[in-house]
Image 1 (cartoon, rainbow, N blue to C red):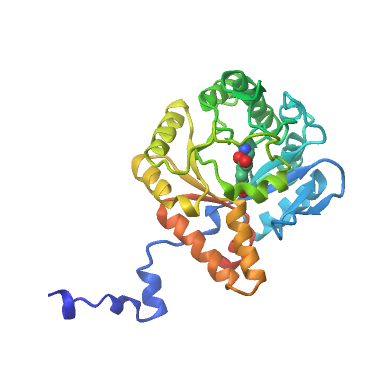
Image 2 (cartoon, protein in one colour):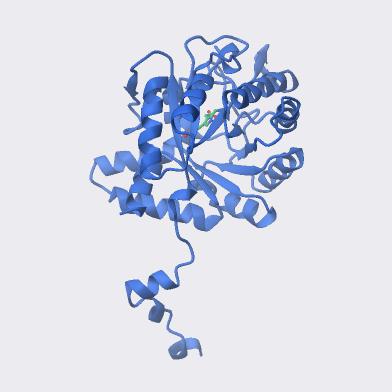
Length: 324
Ligand code: PBG
């Protein structure tokens, strides 16, 4: 008879005791803050579906980087919105691209901030897909060369970590080879290993202007119904040289985060994506939820599931809350 010998409530009786037996604690070092870089000067344009997020030109990105670093945010991930899009995503791997310029400027002014770059082509392609398109199909192998060039150009600009999010097969190996050949064998790869074809990316596509012009991403991103396949994807990426593997989205994919964490001995990242953020913001605006309590509960549960790192648009608010 466990009761009355066992009374789990004993360890919940005061805040001090609850803190002592707490299994999961968030720290500011857990967070990576996403930023959207656009062309121009003095641009700080609101993203309607993501209140609190902006498209910023390089000069504004530098100011934002200084601000968040001072608050204690350890890392940012940069996404680019180029001036011109074409069918070869030329600005993705141009030394004069917006991300390359932003990396250089931020590393120059805020050297202590870890700058991660998203390596993908969709924002730079006129059709909005993550690879080269031929007759309506997204081609895998010809895309690898462009991704490798893009990652190399980010490293040359000074990126600390590159993060491929395209879901082409073999891209981690192609990027590792290109980085090694370029003398960047010490730059880590954080791969979006288990990235699902998710409706939760809706607001991001407004933010990054990357909605596919035709079709969807289901021929390269994972089917949300699949669990075992995520372990296979992570295994392949680790074999190809990924240093950190990511699961994306986070909240509806906690089982996947947990599986990947239990199976592999590399750090696991989870991306608390735009749709997850916007739902919280919308409900908070309506007065239906307590925003900060919900945010901390979500982030804690993502970490509890197994994430060592969390990419989140709530990063600045969460760090402020933790440092209170
Ligand atoms: C680019 C990319 C996307 C996201 C991160 N990198 C969009 C997509 O795959 O359509 C989504 C991030 C978010 O929703 O917050 N491939």
